Length: 442
Ligand SMILES: Cc1cc2nc3c(=O)[nH]c(=O)nc-3n(C[C@H](O)[C@H](O)[C@H](O)COP(=O)(O)O)c2cc1C
Image 1 (cartoon, rainbow, N blue to C red):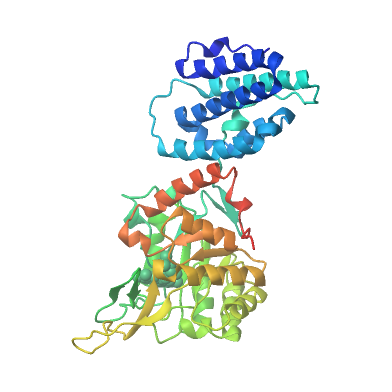
Image 2: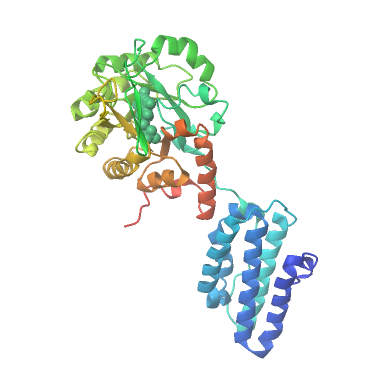
């Protein structure tokens, strides 16, 4: 019989221990009462663990069930126990306990004791069992968010989307930039641009319209002044845009320098007349721009796709064939707002790009479609505000995600998403995001 004496000085566990001892005694009387008591004991133990050691949330909770559930005796009560564990998990999530008198070591010991106890019952019933030992590191290991996409090592699969995060350094006070998978910096063009004039931003239900028009300091200033400041702080992914195929080639060449992790070709900006979306809506042009960049750089080339097309998979296939290492999607959806008092368009540019929560279902659909069409990795974006939103993109087939408009409402949102993503993985008994990529179930 297992020795539960170590639990006796822990008041919450006294009941559990007592139940176990009763269960032992009950076995001699009737197997039914033994099962009942054992169930109560296991329940109490699991509940207690979930409620009293916050680190347990970082365990693979399903393995905790497995741990109990794969014991043949426990299969009798397995289903009910599973339901209870789910309930306990919910309770545990709701509970906030800062006292940690029960250590991980105690928890592992307790699980071993539980196992021994059930093993002992099992023997009495004459069933077979395999002795097991429990390793604290294995049970309590936190999931890892580290990932690698087209050769770029990332501390997490959560990036900042271009145009919504400046050059990263502006967010240093709010965000631990190292935790991000990278920053897709504001779009860079060959010559500096002032962007569009007039009103450039309008709030919409669950989103915003913008027509910034690629305002940026130009590649020369970026290389001379900005890159040296940011290059060692995070993966710098430079978003580039040109007015011609040759522009993309030239920009790619100029940016083939250390400190740049990858290039993101913006072939999908709906807010400029010279270039941008023209390349992103025509498969041949999209392929030509991709080849031009690939020929002029050793860096991974990410091509950013436009949602303003009938069939996004056609463009995705074209850029993959032209050598793209990765695709990112979606850019903004072309939209328009009219002021009913002046009867004029709200935006100076007349139309603008719609982003934010409102576009998420379109983005998820497109990521899912592109994931069926190409083999290269996908960075998904469009309306991501929470870890759950990010998970939808992973399930649809994205290997990483980028957060855009949500940074304006909460500059710290990427950190919250990263923390919550880690908790989600732990709750789902997963060790990394790779286990859910493309795993949507039909
Ligand atoms: C104000 C603003 C500026 C943007 N600038 C760029 C840009 O320079 N280059 C680019 O590729 N995408 C740009 N985007 C698009 C975003 O990177 C992102 O693809 C899009 O907004 C969808 O994600 P979200 O809904 O999370 O914002 C911009 C978006 C906004 C809202």
